[in-house]
View 1 (cartoon, rainbow, N blue to C red):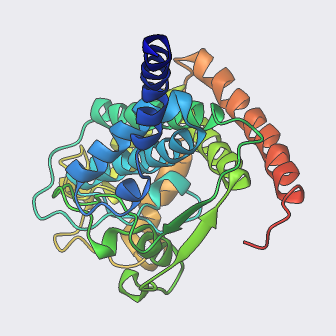
View 2: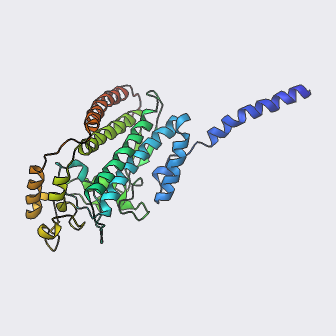
View 3: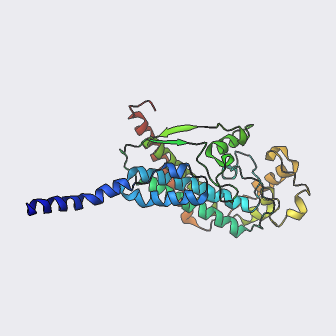
Length: 303
């Protein structure tokens, strides 16, 4: 009898870690419903810790890392008083960053540092999403009107900083306040391939910029993007009132500086490995696109 009770006790002890691991699996909703950056970061850290043994946690963590990469870029631009050109010709510069009342001075070195931090966070996201098995059964409902990033560095994730609001502001003629009150989607394995591919696409852009010395273009034209960040030609070329409303093509002086920007694209290569990396990222994006379509065609649900 004692031997039997001992075996039962041993079995319970052996099963306890598995039961605990299952109970301790973090809820992705805590990440996507967080109202503050500190709440979001705690939820993301828990998902990252669970990611090696839980595909659903890895999937959510990779998505969280992708959006925090966008936050790194947006907050860095906001800090220096970025004014979006609203132009498809500068895709990395279309982030809808709110106005800053007293921006910090910006230098070429600080701008490169923002790009590096953005790019490195995207790399982490791509690696995390890449760790999810191709055949993992993923079904994650996220309301894009609740999930968001901190655009103005106040530590909060407000309704006008939601992914839905950002998508609305990127659409021509649509104000962020017009974003839908609810925009829920069920994301599956195919969507993970898509997001991973998009991370590779953005890394390619960042690495291409970083591979070159674009200081002359920065000093000669970036005051049109950062009109109050103490760039070299600010006092000479930026109108006293800023004149920043609308797109590049709606502002005479910004359009003139955009022409200067184009003519200053004569960038010496300073990090050739980054040029090679940019090509690899684009090739990986193509591979992931094919994996995405393979996963889409294999779906049998109607979600």
